[in-house]
Length: 215
Image (cartoon, rainbow, N blue to C red; front, side):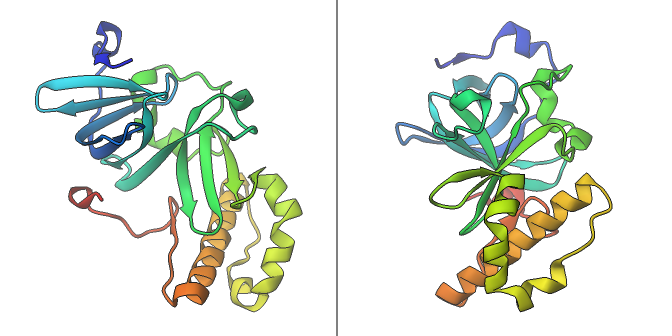
């Protein structure tokens, strides 16, 4: 349901970021966005008008996170049985290419300030607060399941190219980062093979995108 921002949300100091929102009916909206992880609500502001869109209305959206200095992309997913008991939800894109990696907020995690939860930089880098999944094009797999069942075979195809990026993780964070690096390198190798141009992006890369150049 589309509506003006509620009095409850307006009580919070909402952080706005430049972005683009694409609705399921094909309408594209450019302005400022705020994403409420807990409620699965995207708020859109243009000039003095503010509207809230539910997951049933949204196809995907992206915004430049001013605090994290990173372009973030989200998509509404209906068919990932691994997450939230199969209910529709927003997943954040972490790596793109042949292997797509997404994450979603764990339903057991309850933030104190739901309206600004996604602006908490420390929490956004926490491995415990999120569930990570991989979409191979044919199936959804949890990140651990993917590495146990699919990665060994994929790794063998580019063993010499990827061996330089294999690290000994010191903790859960370094293990997650290393896995993302390997997946991004694998995606780049596949893209180069097909088009001779690498095509991979990740939340963990150092390259940043100017928020004024959202596409």
